[in-house]
Image 1 (cartoon, rainbow, N blue to C red):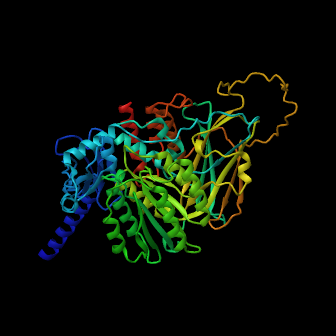
Image 2: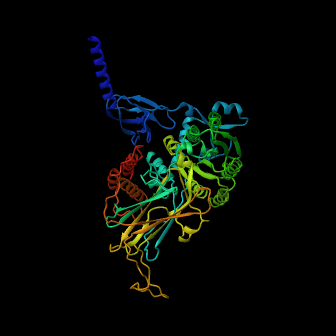
Amino acid sequence: MIKNIKILVALLLLCVSSMLNAQSIKITGIITDPTNDPIIGCSVLEKGTNNATISDMNGNYTITVKANATIIFSYIGYVSKEIKVKTSENINVTLEEDSQILTETVVIGYNSLNSRDMISAASTSSGKRQREKRSKPSISISESDLRSSLEYNKKNKNEEYGSYVENSFKSPLEEALSTLSIDVDAASYTNFRRYVNQGEMPPKDAIRIEEFINYFKYKYDEPTTKDPVKVTTEVGQCPWDEQHRLVRIGVKAKEVEKENLPPSNLVFLIDVSGSMAGPTRIELVKKSMNLLINNLRNTDRVAIVVYASEVGEKLASTSGSEKQKIKDVVDGLVASGSTNGAGGIQKAYEIAEKNFIKGGNNRIILCTDGDFNVGVSSNEGLQELIEKKRKSGVFLSILGYGMGNYKDAKMQTLAEKGNGNASYIDNIQEANRVLVQEFSGTLFTVAKDVKLQIEFNPSQVQAYRLIGYESRILNKEDFNDDTKDAGEMGVGQTVTALYEVIPVGVKTNRLPKVDKLKYQKTNKSNENIILTDSPELLTVKLRYKEPDRDNSVNMELPVLDNKKNDVSSDMHFASAVAMFAQLIKDSDYKGDATYDKVIAQAKSGLENDTEGYKAEFIRLVEVTKSLK
């Protein structure tokens, strides 16, 4: 009898324990450094899950976790801290500085340098080792000086962004076709996040609306035919102008299981010049590459090329089974010298071609801040170099790092012309997203030279405007020209394009007014223009090539508008992101958009947010609203 009671009590305790473990609890607090300053953008992660958040501009955080969960607080340059929680409570956290990073000194040769030159030329290494090796006078910068230099670099930015004229409304009677190269890049969004987490607003030219939209995952229909991509469309009310319609065009690339992917011939091309010194540059590059190395298979191969003043092959092509050997080379990299980026690119292509795997994934992964200052360094010169090399069948992906000296325009040129994609890595969590969670999409191309061409029906559409993609516009003739380069899509990737449409009959002043022509007469009754009675709003055409083919395949999909607004949660969210990007860019077409409208619209689209990126977006909007 007593034995049975003990068993019953044990079972009851087990049930209570299980109930407690299943209970969700809310944890809040402030994250600070040892000087009691708030840490902005600190990662707060429930251990063993994808449940995460970041601290806001005041160091505040809120996260809901399971009882008895362990929370990990981590930020570049600080020692991570783990805390086990049992009940809802307020937990303030102080992160200690990482002595391994902060005891490093910056050593440069004795020269007459101003503070800006110091920052770009400095190289990090063990102070003790450098003192033993140097044979001439040098300047040693202490930890506090290093912090001051980094702060100087932050406040006196030397960053470069391309400038684009915003797309305007067009009449389908004059221009019925809109043609563009697809773009799956998301560097602009993570770069924006970096700025906001520092308590600043980015330059307007740093905002590329399509890259904001395409940072997020949307549920599109999977390809079910032999085509590696499929088009999905949706039409609803435009949230920043209710009289207008918003058209969403989504393209989804096929999924392929990792074990069925072809072997990879990878070349890590790593910028180790002086401008890459520091925890958010070369040190973050090392951590990023180690994440990727962990995902290598035995059939994959990796070579490592570095460039600064000189170019060198640090590791010959090595099997993915020798992970520690590859990591040892990566971990031993030190930043110093000037930047011969073009020489590095040429060397990387040479090695990639030498180890080319027919039918495999041949790719260079360039890690840099884009500050090339030796050899070919202009955007035009680099574009010509890359265009020649891409014919080899080797793809080029760009991982951008750093702040204060980030050359975004150069990154975009390299990625667009190198048949690859560009990502900006602002922290280790983003590196994990790009190189681990989206490993296949980042590195394995299933369709290249993907182009969209939309034909608008003038009997239904008075005017239309492509939102974003200013640098990806093609001539209408380019759509059928297989020699024209366009965007690439990797395994499982999605790409979204939004069009704002003014229906026929809606009063508008959005169409530009042009003086009457002197030498031509216009026919006011449009007798020479015969419109069909088709109810279709538009037709989407898509062209793509197989990665190893030179001839394209064409697909077409007509689109109707039911004049309603019964749209998906993904449509709500994508339109919220577009509205927000237009707000911070101060677009001429932002209509009656407000930050509160963005937040409300985004909250109505929070489905399918297992990784928390959509929730993070809302928090960033709230912080941006405060900054503005």
